[in-house]
Image (cartoon, rainbow, N blue to C red; front, top):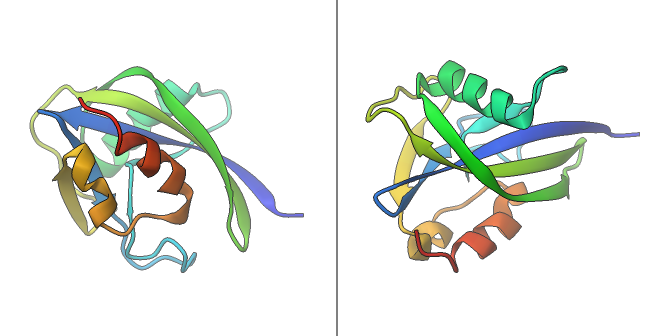
Length: 133
């Protein structure tokens, strides 16, 4: 039986653009060198919103405000099942540091399909590409 992970992703919107961060080498080859929404695993006892704030501070030294849930998806990778919960967020500061990722891009909704995303993000990308912020 595959392990099921509860994870969160921050759809950070600033000046009409959405933040995408690129993973480096990863044991899960399906997500290595792919873009994703910043975030991570929900720890026991945490709400998804608390997990997002913690993960963004740990991974990027970035303080955000979680505004509202966007959508959730379930994706089955070869070794794990991911329940990804995404939230629309706004930044509370102008700067951050990439501690866990190798690149970042601020993309207009019409541009988000121009980079290669982690497979779990595909349905979210499809829905975001139709939105105007």
